[in-house]
Length: 216
Image 1 (cartoon, rainbow, N blue to C red):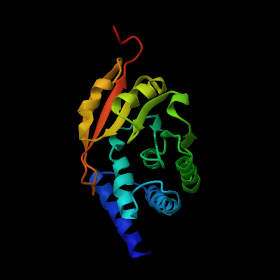
Image 2 (cartoon, rainbow, N blue to C red; image 1 turned 45 degrees about the vertical axis):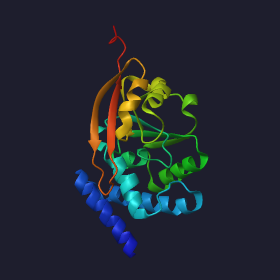
Image 3 (cartoon, helix red, strand yellow; image 1 turned 120 degrees about the vertical axis):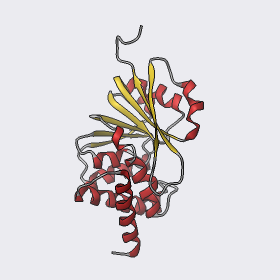
Image 4 (spheres, helix red, strand yellow; image 1 turned 30 degrees about the vertical axis):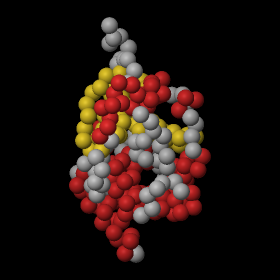
């Protein structure tokens, strides 16, 4: 094991501990393998601006894991998933969660498929498509950096089951985006996200599609 490998493992272990997340050895190994695979592919395909495996742990793995307490599924759609975050991490941490990864970028979806195959993730379905052309119904829809809050909710409204939720990972300027949220969508709560080793300010906005018959 190289010194870099040791630093990556230490950062993952410390970060998960600070988040209060206990993982099985096979889950830990999958998370480490995901970082290794992302680092390898990134050198050739430029999937993320993050170059260091240590930073990938903080900015991709731990950032994704920070929303774990709010994920209930049983079906989850990750919109604008890029190389697969947060969906791949959540699928590893919650094996019973059925995760669909949606992105229009071919090289990023190819990485998703490779990760699913190499990590043996039977609960993940990568899809290459634009959100406007995608069909389905999900209990929760999540996004890290897809669009403004109003656009995110409006574009995915047909994909969220009545009573379902949006999980929007946003920065501190989200107040300015609330006006764009369409009618029939209720703001449930906002939660500050304390991501280990990441100095940026993060917030999770949870919104809910009102169930049929609940509107006047």
